Amino acid sequence: PDWCYPSQFSCTHQCKILEPGQQWLRGEAQSPINVVTRKALVDERLGPFTFHNYQQTFHSTIKNNGHSGTPTHSHRKEGWGVGELVTGYKAVQFHLHWGKDGGPGSEHTIDGEQYPMELHIVHMKKEYTDLSAALKDPNGVAVLGFFYEVSANKKYDNIINAVQKITAPSRCLDQLIPARQNLTTYYRYKGSLTTPGCTESVVWTLFEHTIPLSKEQLQVFSKLRFPNGEPMVGNFRPLQPLNGRMVYRSDAGACWPAPSC
Image (cartoon, rainbow, N blue to C red):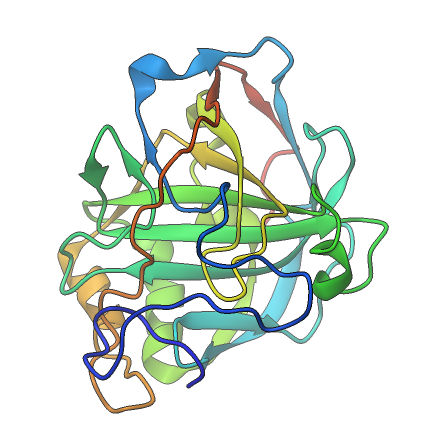
């Protein structure tokens, strides 16, 4: 591959310029970060989160892209979006970062705690038709981050089976994230992609409430392989300095239609 994670012993994790204008690893607004909750400022402008069409089903195939297990959508719903952000965004893909056999594996940390896995649902502004164009906008991309904790969760059985078979049934984004009453607290900051070219065009939202997943379910992800044949574990980028950026906190309630999938 043209880049790698620290767990790939053959090289070190380097973010490099892939196209003119993209940021180097030495950028001042890189991700992921450690969120220090006592320093996060409550921002009254961060109102209730509204999720549009997260209950709509989609068909996908789980693809090992050499860095993660990423579902590719054969029937993408253009209506996916998060309405709390000033400009509407639509979901384009989601992927996961994990450790080894249920050990530490999230990219972001909360008060120094690294969770076993982290889900990223990547959105771009509705006005764009491809992610590369959205990344040229300083606020063109919005990523929702969700953390996992070790606990049983039958709701995830289908996607765990999908990872094992590299196929996935029809599902909806609603099934992947916590119930709406558990999405009342989240953190917001400006950052970057966590993969090359680490472009600083991302509005990050990290939800405090965790998603349960059993250790056995988490271990399934460790069976995937990097292109060099090594187990795909530790596919997370190291923490980056905050460099004076502010992290904001919201106690807003989430609001969406009842799930139908």
